[in-house]
Picture 1 (tube, rainbow over the protein chains, first blue to last red):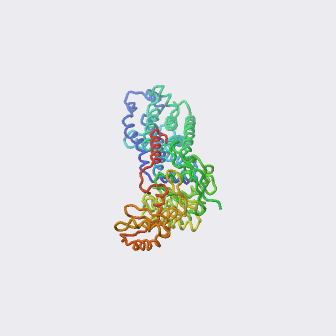
Picture 2: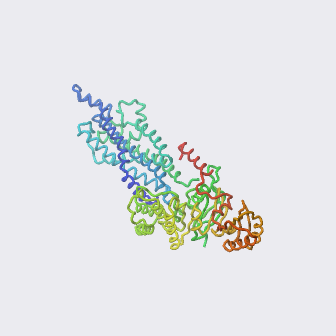
Picture 3: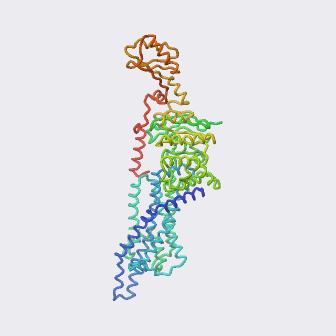
Length: 282
Length: 337
């Protein structure tokens, strides 16, 4: 790896991202729609506010179904913050395909830049951006509570270490998905093929995670799948830090470690596929 | 001085069946402008891609600036400049940003970069639009930016793939003026592919004519034209002129006479000197002439001579084009590439 080439290519990616606000808006669209529509309409824990329920019954319900989150919306909003990592890194792979179509990847590939420089620049630029966007979605979810809608209530006491854990979770999850989408982007030539594949990946990954469902309502087989899902792992780090970890079997760092495993595996696969795609065609 | 480019038995086969380049050998001397001339699909770009380590070799060996292209692709990329057929600049970046990026990629020292970038922007008449996004550039400006990117690191060998495709005559003249200046200043070696006959004729020191993946002739433009057999004087007599043919054959310097529909095509080394003699011979026989015209051999005739076909700049896709397209199409369907 050559630091100058890598940093010049990273700067290029960041310039391109900053000059394309439409991509940022699009990557925020899905999580925001989920927050202001789905989350509002689906906030079933509001019935806990009906008179007659004792505080003990109420907290038992929350503990069983939402692992200690104060209400469904808060629980779900933490899931959406994690989902931003997917919607925001998806463009990183699409940009590779557009750079192929517009010729600029041809230029870079014909230069002395190595596959590591080319892949690394896109990976880093593409993984930093979702962290900012995730915090934007987190802020929005909290603000909704002050606008007369259901909002995210931070019921735990958030520490500095907790914030760092949240940043790490989103960053590692973004690195994992950026690796995955870059691997697809370098291996595929047609945008329509890419977007079809991405759609085929996106929804199953979201629906096998604990981002949307109340944990206690999931059948055990789905819980089993979801506990290994990388989105679940990141979202659990968020929930432990925002609502307290009393009902989670492991501390946050265990989930972070699981995420690192996912990211490392995906990174290894993506590096191989990228090097193959950029090697001289035989 | 060793040759700048040496290719020996270079071959490229796509999908194991389509021979895009078929065992070609040639060498390019230092400081020379060497042109690959041929119709679409002849194997020009495939050859250039192998010499620049963009494509792997199926067989054969090639060295550029003393480096084996298969064994040292990385070092090779650092020493050569490459201008593609299509625009490869980043549309969302300014001309200057594109050049600064290229300077970093091709290893121009950091402290020299601003000076080098400004120098190239001025030389290629892009200084006024340097800070505009490339998507606002005209076709000619994009071509000049491509050239600037290609020579940012002062390469020793410059590869140009159909460099002036789509440019107007003024733009083409401007492009070649810059290449001429660069050669004078730096002793650059240029390898180019083109299907513009006049460009090959006017700009190249030597030419290789390539057709169906094989080199069919090489030489300087004038050598190639001489091989066709010099000038052609066309004589159109009035009325029956069967007596004229032996008289024309007897004229000094005439190397051949062909007649078709009562018109004679007379081959000779110097047509100008022959015309008065032709008129004299006809007058002696009491024949009147409808017209006499002189045609100097062009590369068009050279191409006809060596390939047996007229040169067409707008030929449709060839077998190679179709095979490459189909393989990409099938790969895309399988989702492989």
